[in-house]
Amino acid sequence: MTAVLQKKICMLGGFSVGKTSLVKRYVQSVFSETYLTTVGVKIDKKTVDLSDRIVNLILWDLAGEDDINSLRMTNLRGAAGYVLVADGTRPSTLDVALSLHKRVEADFGPLPFVLLLNKSDLKEQWAISDIAVAELQQKGWWVQPSSARTGEGVEAAFKDLAVRASS
Amino acid sequence: MEVLPASLAERLRELTYNERAVAYLHVDAALTLMGAGGHLDNYGLAAVRLGEPVVEQVYFLEGLLPLEESSYFVPSVELDSGRAADLHFHQDGATVWVVLLDVTAARDAARQMQQKAYEMTLLQEKEVQLNRRLESLNRDLEAANDFLVTISTKISHYLAPQIYKSIFSGQKDVAIHTERKELTIFFSDIKDFTATTESLQPEEMTFLLNEYFTEMSTIALKHGGTVDKFIGDALVIFFGDPETKGTVEDARACINMATEMQSRLAELNVKWRSAGTEQPFRVRMGINTGFCNVGNFGSTHRMDYTAIGAEVNLAARLQSIAEPGHIVISYDTYVLVRDIVAARALPQISVKGVSRTVVPYVVEGVLDEAGRKIEIFSEHMTGLDFYLDPRAIDATALERIRATLRNAIAALETRGGEDVPAGVAHLDQKSSPSKVSGSL
Image: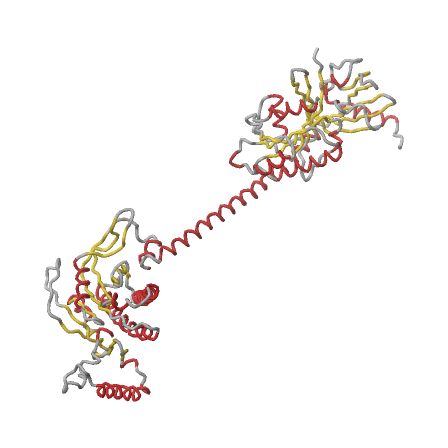
């Protein structure tokens, strides 16, 4: 029997970057145009088959970071990895993601993570430069554009994280 | 802690239990579920199995157990059932109690507030972004506009100002189109320009010619003339398009322009001579009034705004028969300006394309308001710069000038002339300096 592992993964990022939509796309393969803000945390489970092992990802979709809500670091307790999400049409959300990364690293040490530049379907409003992305990739970061609407980059990001968080 | 009265404590317990849908899980040190109770179904936990590992059944506990401290709290957790719960962890010896309290109503209320705040913030962000984009677009537009202004300013130097104005103000369409209009056309040419300037360096010649054209164009503009073109050292100007004050006024403006040009030329010659130019510029001028075709000629790729027709050729022809320093006008122009100029008829000529006989008139002077002829004297050659406009002489200087002129004549008489037969050695005072009325 293949061993079943269970890993807690946190979704982190500014508000309205699409964390909930990414989880919904990944877990239920659906997308809704309606924006519904997350309060507290919403927890979902997704099973990933990595051929040699099966991993249950316990996805903690945390409320977005903003002026009113700052991240409760205790919510990250026990996390095996995290998904940083920025909105590619709002450059300030990349700064939020980078600052969250720093704070998590300071409290929990290096954990596997991916950075998704979400809303890649909104090409005309795209506002994050290729240079900024290349600089992060240069540091060895897993950075990819993603779209909860089209599904671009979603599966791959979670799978990559599942591999790294469970190895 | 204050001990509440027993009945109140009981009521509170009841309230909390029912209103907050209290449920609990009891987990041992090996993370096995030892017990569970309360409103488990409210959280989708009704089917939990005692005696089995808890984290596999209650997956939201992943990573949280064993506890790191005696109590731990995760607020507002939305579970599969859709209900939101506060999770309270409480260490009890080697075991841990997990208490779930329903906060769905509070969560929904908070969500409503937060949703509004975020939507507002997003709108503000969008506004800022739109403003930035607008500003950047505006900057691009301004840059493009500046570029166009620079280019159009450059282009303007290749066009008569009136033409430039009428095109850039949108009055005139840039298309092959001509109109038949009555124009007064002016032609001028520098006599023996090549010979006059052959001793000059090309740069000096260019400078001289440019100064000449600049000065003449300035006078043309002042009088409302449209500078049509420069052909070598020749200048073509017309009056009557794109702006006109009527045929009579256009013709008078042209005559006034021509006389002012001759006058200015006399001054320029003095200046150029002192700068080292031996030969003065002596300019022939021809003026005619008649119907011409005026507008854009050429191809769709390259157009010229100009006037063409036999009447234009006639102006050129009149210029060619003018003595250097003189203005020759056609009868058709003369009848329009006879009250402001004194002119003498020349032998008639015929011009190809003009059916009528043409009587040229040489302008001899301008008339003052009382109709009196004012003579202006001008002569320029090697050894002589002479220009006399009696109107311009200050009364206090009259006697001094008379004396200078008498001395000058005396000097010329003493010089005599090797090539002049004896007896006619006296200078013919009537012809020299000549009344070069063209140089008014």
